[in-house]
Image 1 (cartoon, rainbow, N blue to C red):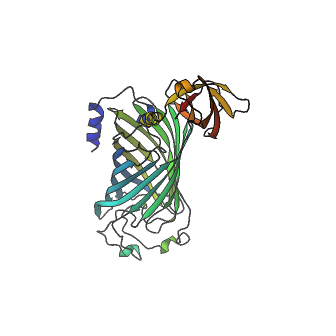
Image 2: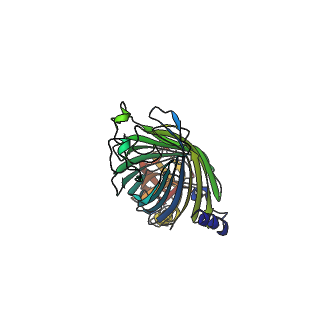
Image 3: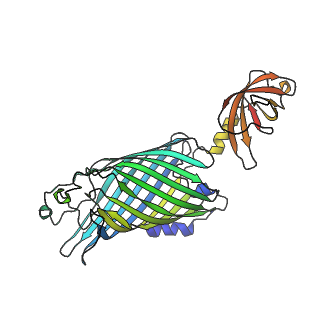
Length: 392
C-alpha cells in the first residue's frame, strides 16, 4: 500500500493554482453540501518499551516485540454547509513475540458513525464540534490471573463500544499559517476511565503542499477502580504490550507531517511521531500514510453566486446617518428599488470576499436614490460609504 501511494505521488501532476485551504482543510471545516469524501490510511505502530501505572519506563525483554497495523476507510458526506456525516471502518493486524511464543491476529477492529457541525466562523477563528460512536464486533475473554491467559491467544484491542465528542478550534494567523487545536471527551471501551484526547499543531501552507508539527496525547480523568490496586485488575490476552486493558492511561506524543496536493483533488499525507512520556501504555514509534479526495459538491463561491441570484439590483452606500440607523444608496425607482424592498449590506473586496454585515428595508425611494433603514446587524463592523447594498 505504501509503494502504491508513493507511486501516485510521482505520477500525478501537481497544480500551482490551488488555495492553501485545498491542500490542508482545517480540522474545523466540513465538506461542501452534496460532496462525498473518501480517505484511506495505514498506521504502523512499533512498541519500543512501556510505561507502568506510575509512569516509569520499563524496557522490553530482549526477545519481546509488539507491532500493530491499522487500515482505515472513511466515507463522509456534506449534508449541509455546516453539517457533515460519515462512517469509518478499521481493519487491524497485531503481532506479539516473546522468547517462547509468536502470536498474531487480524480482522475488523471497529466500525463508527461520524458527525461534525461547523459553527459560523469569522476570518480569524474557526470552530466545530464532532462526534463519533464506535462499535467493536468482538468481546475479549477476561482472566483472573496472568497464568490463566492461554499462550496462543491475543486480542485485537480493547473490546466494547466507545463514544467521543471533540471541540475543534483553528486560528488562522495568515494565509500561509494556521494553529490547529482540538480537545475531546472520550468514553473508551473495556470499562476504561474517561479521558481527554488533545492535539495542537502549527501548520504551514503552500500552494501544493503543507507541513506541520505539534503534540497530541491523552489526559486521563483517573477514575479507574483499580488505580489503587492494579494487581487486582482482571487480565486480557494482550501479548507484549501495555496499551490494552490499561489503568488511567495517558501519553504525550510530538509529531510532524507533510501533505501534497495532486491533480487539484487528491491529498497524500505522511505523519510520524513517538510517545515520549505516559502511564499504563506503550512507548511507541508510529508512522501514518493516508490518501484522501472528495467530489467537490456545491462550493462556497457557487453558494454565494446562487444567493446573489435572489437579488434584483445592486447599489453602493453614498451616505450614512450620524447614528448609523439610516443610509442612502445610489439606486432608486429608475432601477426598480421601491419602498419596502428588503436589502442586504455586504463588505466586498478585490479578492472575492463578501461578508454579510447587516439587513434592512427601503424606507423611502427617489428617482436615483433610496433611503434604507437598518433592521438587523450580523457583524460588528462599521456601516460606511462604499459598502455594497443588494436589493431583493
